[in-house]
Image 1 (tube, rainbow, N blue to C red):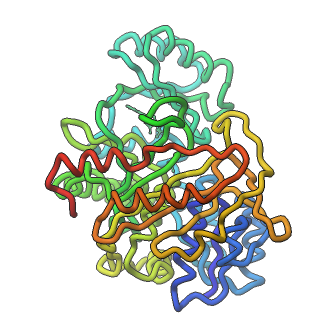
Image 2: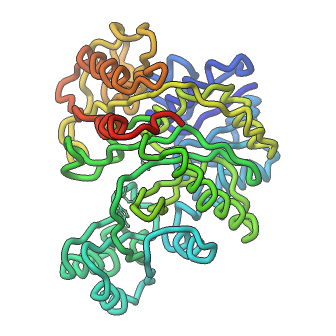
Length: 436
Ligand code: AMP
Ligand code: GLY
């Protein structure tokens, strides 16, 4: 089978790395990819949003399955376009991708189908004064969200009613997030710990991958600015067997059934961003794709042939029993460019990759790198995802191994959090529900 993966981050590297292990895969392409991905796939210099260019490439090169990493092409309708051309592709249709593409759509869908989520109202452009009046009714803090895609930056947690009014004005009147913020969702703040759960689904059947926790803030102890994610670990002990059952029954099943009955069956990876609250799991957001960096810990734990799994989904014949998980834990520490998520420098030479290349249970996923002759150079904010596997659910061992490898990797201005996975360790020591 010839496969094209679309995207260029750590998520796509993890997917490519796993696909390369499949005996079924012959040619493996990645558009546009990065220096790490180039070790396992042939790079194609096309942008993920160049749907017509990608379509041409697939036809000319006999690609039998396309796997879409990022949300933008999905929201733009790449799946509809490929399927119209009789091509197999992994991901949701344009209408189903609205679960991520419009927060107002997602909230309304959840309300209609009784899926647990934060209490909310949405307001479209022109509704500023009603929106402001609604915030005055809510207890603090108040969560204000831009409706559309805003590269993970469109969510503001407001500690005062005045701050909420400022946030609304920025989004609705001053267009701080462009058209994405013309419509806003205002919702109650949920208390609890977050977890990410990915369901692979062909629209009817689904399989849940290892549960994970992201570390979204830039500083240790979950302080400082929000980022794309500074590290992750799996599996997440906060999602006990009982909580996972609740997530399946109260969130995943009604979502898939609701999408089907609303005429937009959901196929692909349904990313459930959850708050595990004292009254049960609630949806913070849905994404229409694999999450990053969670994919870098979740995909290595899949005990099965990823190519066959993704192909079966594109052909609407998923066998959930073919999606098993290794009895292991995984930790990914993101090495970023100093200054991220604000201004940072790129073009720094990365040293030490050779030293860790052949270590058992360790893999360095590249998030933003390019080759320059023999050298590997940083090319973005999040540069590397250093991932270690701890066999037999050894989370502590995985954390130690990941940080040992981080210690051998250097580039000018490298920054990383030093507490990735600690939340999981603390919870493991408090509970007896380690394995699920
Ligand atoms: P989102 O882009 O919707 O995932 O929001 C980004 C981050 O904001 C989430 O990962 C949470 O940490 C936080 N957040 C969003 N909505 C809420 C909420 N209703 N209550 C508490 N935190 C939230
Ligand atoms: N890890 C957060 C995301 O992928 O959206």
